[in-house]
Length: 258
Length: 314
Image: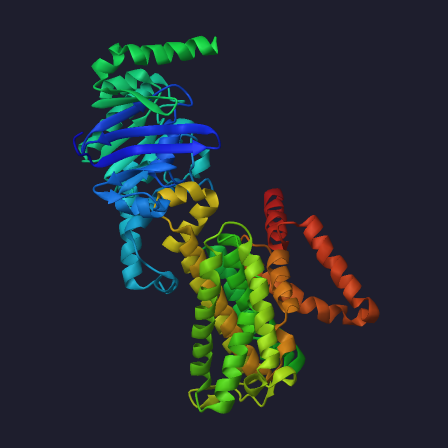
């Protein structure tokens, strides 16, 4: 397998008796948009939580640009240049839109308590930089007019965009988007797909978990299909749409729901 | 800083500034105001710790004691000037807080409360038992007055010094709240999961605030030692740690004003209840219970809501 910016080998996660991820190998190449799809419970969000250090894997390794991620804490992984959004929004509801994004820019600042308390010049310069970076990302996501709103008072669609703006403010090289289109209408989803392409255009590699197939097939370079924590297919969208194993997994789920 | 904050600060400054003209040389009122300020310094730090880092300390009396004993020992046994002694106490307290906070704040939950409870008890025993340094249970006396620029600071000047300190710590705290550290702590409060993913090291931020609150308490302790010139372990017991917590809770943890108000109320209350003699403690307890039952978010929140209702009517 070709070396990628992210390299996952033999990844396994067992919760009690449940194998949420069961021996997964894949790579993401730099500059790609790669999507992870699969029926509910296939292990997609678990994969994201493993990659961002929320919990440790039972077995297996994952490397980002040659650095082993196993055993690192979430904030350490963020410092390496991996950022993410959350399927069930995790905004800082007690803060404004602008402040949410400013926390994202936290990564690249160093002011301690002492210089903060005394408003030393270095700290003021840093604050200014953080603020500018935050505004820049708000404009990129088209949220600048809502900057002073409380984060929780935004409509759902814009809360999703705010999550992306906040993640972008961390200067990531690699962005994990967890179901960004869930709950969006068709027009919002179209805007979102253009936004994701623009993010890739900034040189950021994107790993996308999504149920909206038109979005996935429209923008992905490669698609990885999971079912019961295992890889059942991987390839370009055209191949995936015709893959019998994939069709069976999705139809099987439909039958199960009926 | 908001305009309302500035107005209240000016009002308090005017009140403190006019004190000698209002109360003359009344030592009793003067010392009450000084204690209010000293307690306010400690509770502001505690308020940052509780309201922003979401942690409870049951050991702040010990940091207060560390500051007081550092100042007392250094100024009676060495020729170190009082400000340098106070600074040494602050550095020592900060260091000790780091050592206590570092392992406990990495864990989620209320380990901090338990750890600081134990730490406070250990320090209380040390204040009592290391009598060669601390004078043991009978304490240390003859602590010289604080000398600044060649002049001893006493009486109304001491009042100004303490409240000047309160003002500086207040502004320092506001700046901290409105900085990356404050934002990071609020983010952790909002969603620890997302804060981590944004690169916020929650444990480190909490340790920083804990250290800061210990330094505030230490400075308050030094000012206390020079003011009353005699210290003994009984001032630094668990009871005082709990009283400090009560001040923050009664005032309200949502703003720094709550901490200041809480310290003022609980410093004055016992004085006004003294007339009840045997029933003093009973009345004190009943009042605290009433506040927590009817104003669970503190007196400050009650005032804010009453104010909003008044403003709404007119």
